[in-house]
Structures are given as C-alpha cells and as structure tokens.
Length: 168
Image 1 (cartoon, rainbow, N blue to C red):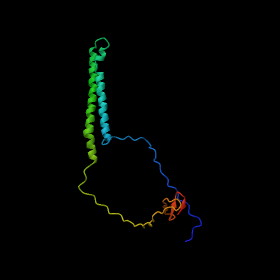
Image 2: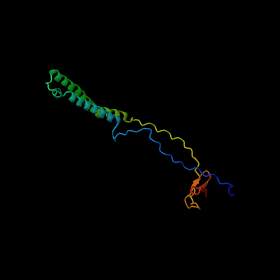
Image 3: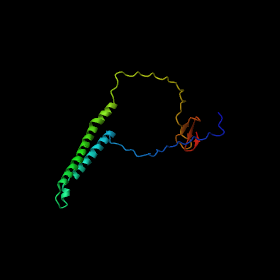
Image 4: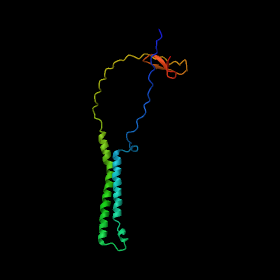
C-alpha cells in the first residue's frame, strides 16, 4: 500500500453544548401537592383573612375610645360588619376544606378511571430490517510521539492523535 501524498485533514473538534439559560423561572410545588391543593389553600387563606376583617370591623370598643359612649347605631353597624365579614370568611374556609378534601380528589379519581374489562388487542410487531453490522473497530493504539491514546476516525479508517494533531 503506497503512502498518501498528503494525509487527510484532521477531524473537527467535538463541540461542547452549553446548557441553555432558563427562559423563565419555574415554580415547583412541594412533593405530593397539586395545583388543586394550592387553590384550596388559597380559598382557606382568603376565608381566614375575611374572618379577621370581621373581628376588626365588629370591634365596638374602638368607637368608645373617642370619649363619648357609642350610640346604638354604632353597635348595630359593628355587629352587622362582624357577622357579614366573619360569616363570609367562615363560609370560604369550609368551602376550601371541602374542595381540598373531597371535590379535587374526586376529580383526580375520575381521570384515573378503572381499566376496561376487555384488554385491547396487541398490535402486530412491525417488520424489522436487518442493518449491516458496522466493521469492527480495533483497540486504540497509543501515539508513538506522546504516548496518549488515539481516537478512531471511521471516515478515514485511521487513528488520530489530538495532542500531536497527526494520524497514526
């Protein structure tokens, strides 16, 4: 076999792909929590805030701090505010617990419906075409100049040393 007049060009260097930066921040829920659980918790939280507002609006003692005794209409307005806001808050807390404990799990169970009694027919396997086996690649020899392992380049069926940039 006659030596080549000029050796083939060196193979291109392998490019390292850098991870792409995140396009946006991702919010991760704790393990075992779903978006439905989070919505139920938010309804409960809003209900709790409304209960607090009801207690603050129903405080007749604030009107008494002005020095004069509160009028009957002040008491009536305070009680109305207390019952309206606290009642709405209690309703939302109960609704949130019902949603979290009953409605959302039932919706998830409906999605995971029981499998049907009749199993689907197995599809016939697709015909497989045999591809020719690749030629065996001999063990990588060491570079005679630097002593480092070489890399087999299938395109040229030769070994290449990246350190010395030569074919072996």
